[in-house]
Image 1 (cartoon, helix red, strand yellow):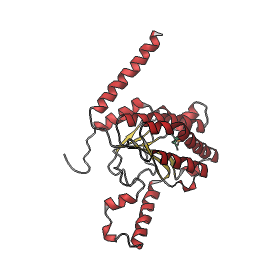
Image 2 (image 1 turned 30 degrees about the vertical axis):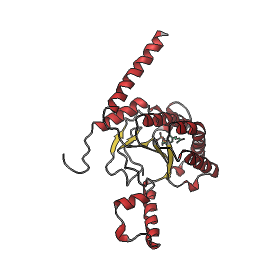
Image 3 (image 1 turned 60 degrees about the horizontal axis):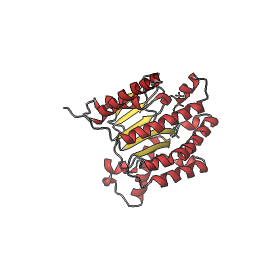
Image 4 (image 1 turned 45 degrees about the vertical axis):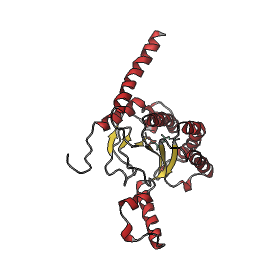
Length: 259
Ligand code: FPP
């Protein structure tokens, strides 16, 4: 029994120390995450890819909670890309079911923690049942003032930009906007991220050094953090998250200027 207590304390103490360290410096306002490696994680254990995503959604729950506890304002996760439709139907269906299960099991916690859920992407091609569930969650959290939790669904950075250009063109055509009015701040409003600040930190697990069409316009000056290949998303936990944030806090951001 003592052994169990000691190993629990051994784990808790360094985590507390990390939290203290992170809290002693300004935390990023906006963190974006590419939750990569669910399939490989499952394969290594002789499980189906779908099970990998299910374990991945458990990691996500912990990371949302840590983000909210740290007082970070925005968290954006890549849950389904415009390219993910190329996957087998079985896997796509499992991801849709997972979304529904996630909302069923987590909506109360999101509400309790004052978290506002928001979708980046076009939900139009999602099954009706899934759309309804998502809109229900959006409606039920719309007045929350804590963490803004953005979930990118059927999202692609190029589509985001194209969509914004179409919106601008429509507004010019209808006379709401003049071409000369377009500047960066106006353009931003037409992106899925609207008035949100750009991500300060982008995290990608599983050792892939790619952006995979995620937030292409918004990450111009984002700090990138790629994990080692052995760290797959279902194994990503609060300690690794804190270490990534600490690493970010030790960087010098210059935004093209000199110090
Ligand atoms: C990439 O791993 C992961 C995805 C395409 C899906 C991410 C989804 C989750 C973590 C579940 C989130 C669930 C909810 C409810 C929001 P991969 O499948 O490409 O992994 P691989 O590169 O090892 O094959």
